Structure formats: C-alpha cells, structure tokens
Image 1: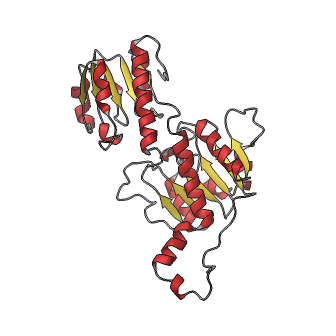
Image 2: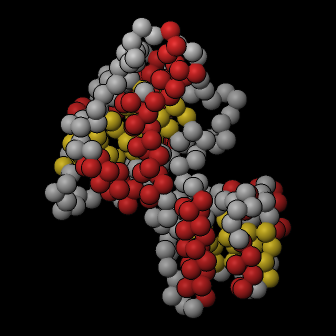
Image 3: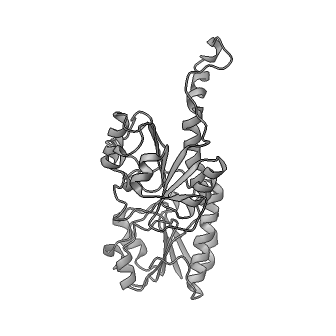
Length: 315
C-alpha cells in the first residue's frame, strides 16, 4: 500500500513511534499539509491518515486509488463524508481514546474554580502571605463540590466519565442528551431545566447542525449567575461573542474552554483576555498515554480494514 500521513505534527512532538506504519508498505509522512498541497500529496495514495487535514471533494477527486481514510481524531468534520461514501472510500475515526484525559481536564477546571488554586498560588508568589496577619488569609472564597449541581450536555463516553467523577464528589448530576439511558446515577432533564439549576454546565456533545451555537445569548441567559461554563467539545457549539457578553455582564460567573471556533486563536478572537475566562489551547486530549492509545486505535483500524473487517467506520 501507499500510505500518506498528512499532518503528524498535530499528534506528536517526536514522542510517538510512527514507524509502525511501515508494515503497511510505502509510507510518506508530512509534518503539516497546506490545503493547496493536499491534492498532489495524496494523488497516488491507497490510504490517507490525518488529524485535521481538510479532505473535501475538490481534493479527493484527484486521489483515484484512495480506498481508506483513517483519522487521528474522533471528530470528522474535516472529511467530506458524502463524497467518500459515493466513492467507496472507507473512513474510520478513533472513538473514545480521550475519555479519561478530557474528563480529567474538565475536573481540573472545576477544582481550580471552586478551590481557587491559581488565585492563591499567585497570592503567595506575590509575597502577600508573608504580610498576612493570620495563617489562613480568606482572600478568595472557596466552595465544596459536595451537593453542587453539575449539568452535562451529551452522554457519550466522556459525559459518562465526567458523571462518574462527579458522583464520587457527591454532586447532583443532571444530563441533557438525545438518548435517555437507564442510569440511576444521573437524572435526565430538559436543556432549559439543566441550565436553570446547574452550578456547572459542561459540554461533551459532538458539533453538528443541532448543536452549532447551542450556547448563545438565550442559553447563557437561562443559566445561574454564579454558574461555571465549560466546553472541551468543539468551538462551534458556542457563540463566542455571546460568551464574552455573558462574562462581561455577569450573566454567568466564569468559564473554561479548551476549544475555539477557529484554531489556533486568531488575532481578532473576541475571547482573548476576557475576564473570568480560562482558555487552554486544545490540550485536553494530549497526555502521552492518551496519544499512545490513539495511535494504537489508528493502527488497529487500518489493520482491520485490510483484513476486511473495518472498525470505527463513519463512512
């Protein structure tokens, strides 16, 4: 097989052994591939492995030998699925590889917000503890997670893991999902009800037509004024201007997000330096163990496709 990896720099900083792909045949790896380079680079490929490379009909039509697209990702918005289906190109994603890592980062946001870890760290670093008249300065109010209401949007593998951690903290767990499961550890409610009662709202659903800008001005207006909003899913789920206005005007208390509509962040991003907002640069999925697991899934997917039993098929 002729296998092309189009954007390995998005999955490794020389800490993954990608030589494992060589067992499939002639392998060419590119750090990154600009859109105007894609058609030429994949023209003779039998299989393309990518993360965020845009593979639309315009470039795929040039790849006459292409039979397989493997994704270093769960999402597949960058692939023209309809064209792939019509052209008998199998597309396989990597589902559930980042469950533990994303749930971990979600609670990192939550614990920092309620325990004020960075606020107190900065307080000490600035020398202010040295001048305190008491051994425990009450500079920043902190709160227990016990008994707090957490609202989870989407109940796939990540949503379920977040729920299990929340239950370990004895939180009240509410879920809004298209599918209602038989799960006594959570309570399924309407979106409006979830927004109105939750101290924390955390998003773990895919980006699609139904979820695009789900969190807009109206949605934030329905939330509690002391609520923490978290998005580790996809940037397009949030109307970024509406989030800025909600934070600027005290509609919600704080937010923490790992994703933006356009990544990397642009110079004119409306969320840059907004108060009470933590932004991390799409890092929830990047722990080494998580990416090692991801690589294993991508290899298994290609193996299974070759053997005639494709797995994680999206087209």
